[in-house]
Image (cartoon, rainbow, N blue to C red; front, side, top):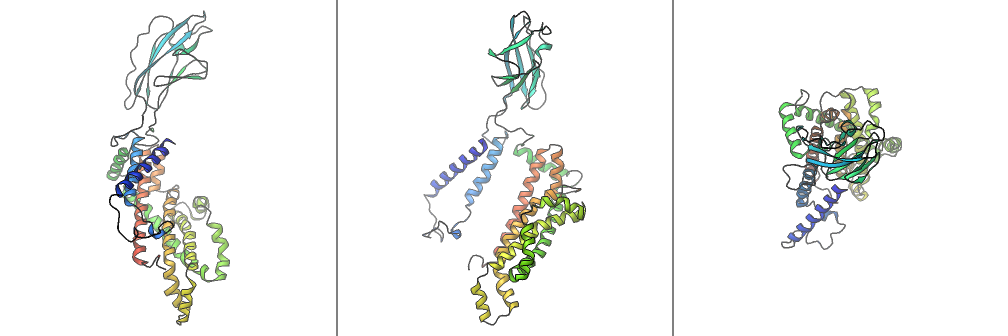
Length: 419
């Protein structure tokens, strides 16, 4: 909730600042001269300033919550340094004595425990060290005099009464009295995330250059990415080769539509991940099984896209072509296919995204290389920086492919949106 609130605040602040600055220099183009823009999709264009600020905001939040050195602002991090508190012990005779515990919280190399004098009385001072985001257990019974006698117990921490399984907030942390009489000390964790959950951006960048130079598990980074890309392209190509003709047939023939519609509508909501066990049983664990899984991920999307493209052709264009003496083949070639291409390109972008999302699962079993295999192998050893790096690379490559497909659509289907 804190991260979400931070992100919303950045969004609102950026929107207000950019809008205020733009009032001084209004645009003068076709879109700005339109009298009605709300609800007009053609008047909505991605604001590149908003895109840049959005990416910067994500990195700012990422760095702020991971203690990054390249980000000037940080949320409070874990407590580091020496903290101390006092506990009150009571012996069998009902006498009470205080002792001070000093704990040194650290990051990096483990330091020596603080040197403390035992003090006077039966309750003796103690010390310990603890890593940031962790807790440490102190056993006063092993240190105090008379602790072995029946009736010995700890009754207060920093003057606050405490009982078994109760915790007390102290300066820079919290102390829990366990049912065994030990003290579990947990320094304040702050709001920053532990590196094992999310590393800082510079850590991920450093890991990228390391793997780009040395590879991962004796295979170069580019071979990993190339293997995943080839699998995705092969599965997508096969899905398109089967799905597009099937979609055309369903859009042009009632028999084909009636025959295949139950199959398509049944398989469309089934996630590709649910098919992994069957794919392994039928096609094995090697490349053929992975490509078949990606083929199935793309097949139904491309089929529905092609069917939707045929259904969306204006009937007036069909009538006009017939009135000019066109044959069915000519109508298919010159009317149906050109007018259905925008829907097919949209489906292709969706299918490619689904294939990229499925490639990690496709490489779960017996993959020797691949981006998904790299992520899965790294997760087993809690190498979160490699996991995050792999996710970012998959996203960047997927975004690049989508950009190329949009450029191809703009070049090959210039009539999109023009009726």
